[in-house]
Amino acid sequence: MKLSFSNGLTAILVRGGHMLEKEFAAVIRVILDSAGSPAPYYHNIPESFIVPSVFFPSPEIEFKPDTLSSYGSEYILYVNFFHSTTELAYELAMLVYHDIVRRRRLIPLIDSNGKKTGELMRINNINIKKVDECAYQLQLDWISRTPYTCEEAELVELFYINGGKL
Image 1 (cartoon, rainbow, N blue to C red):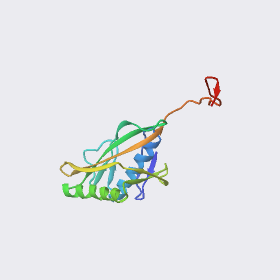
Image 2 (cartoon, rainbow, N blue to C red):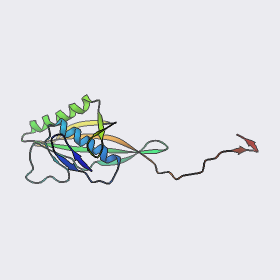
Image 3 (tube, helix red, strand yellow):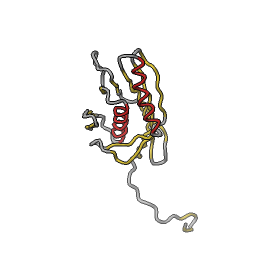
């Protein structure tokens, strides 16, 4: 998926899923826009990386029971913010934290062209902690609901119990 941002940055997200792409891309967009477009890193951070920057690792995923016709996948994302000082890294993470909380933890979903779809997803938890000198981590988690794959079946039209019709 190609993701274009208002600041001219473009990200390519290749993961193979459907809804994860939209949700993960939407989270990336909100974070980069809220933080003032720091340099994004997606797979590995090079030794001579730019600051301010933000690193988006692959999320952790855990199965969650949902309904009879769908299942939930809880995504836990640990986003790292880097800056020239610990205080500036904290401020960068706090910009994002407050922006997401002000939105009532609702993130607008986007399509593959970066346009808002009108759908929203809710962030369940959001936390910030210091992880190193000049680095703060923002933890976000949300549940993505996916319908089960169901085989077509013939529906029962008449049902008899003990010779009677229901």
